[in-house]
Image (cartoon, rainbow, N blue to C red; front, top):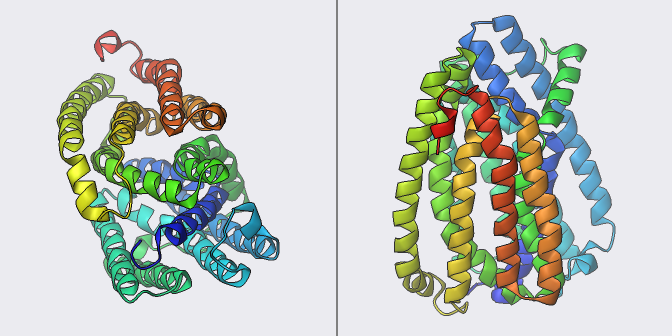
Length: 403
């Protein structure tokens, strides 16, 4: 914000959010593929493993190419006017748009490369590469902003970092896991078609979180100023640290959940759920209290008075994140056991319906009402979709005493 001003930072956030919607083009394939590869590996069915992996690479590469064509077309239109970009010129906005879209679209086939680690039970190594990429991009961002570089320069650095780590992961797998490196030669039309159909069933697991995360920014851009977006995004980033920490824990458990479900060890699965829920809930409550107490000071120190710290907004955001944490535990045990219908219903409720009603509330109220509306629909989705799905998964095995 010091390098660009708050308003320019707000416009950057709008473009990032808009381009992140390009990830919807993978149509849920990586989510289904990840669990399917893990299941095939657990059964030692190598023909199925390679068929899924190679077909997914073909489909995701084609979808990425299609996505780039779509964004080239968008770049020729007056998108800067639609998104209320007042500081960036059309030329600069076009450059940033295409670069950020390339960053997102490159991630589509890259998910297959990182998914190999998860399917082999080497989640830690895959997570290490992801963390290294995040740290590298953060360092590049810091250095370029210290030099007060333009937004397009930062977008170029992000694209370069993604390409570098994509190549490094491929080299690592060729050296350590040569038999599991993705190729095209075992791809089949039948497997590709099945991937598309099964992926669509899991599509909500991708567009749901994306709509909530990026859709809120787009909605705020329609009713608020760039400064309001910068304030909301900065405070939400701080609050999301808690949700991201829980996501790391649940991601580590995901392969074990899939294994237990494949082996039909439902009593062990029910026990794992209860313990996970209890530990996550307890730790999150403590963390929420700490964040409420120290949050204003941390945010003031971090943002250095560039953004007004709204204590009520912080309270609403932390409360909303806490509800999302509860849902994330249920969601983890739902999606890893292939109950895509419940996941779809949950995200339709929280993402589409919740955002529509949230936008209406924001139109006639304020940001507090907007966040409260999202929280209410989060609770509705949890109660009517995720909780019954988890209980059904255990077929009544102690399910009445889950929570």
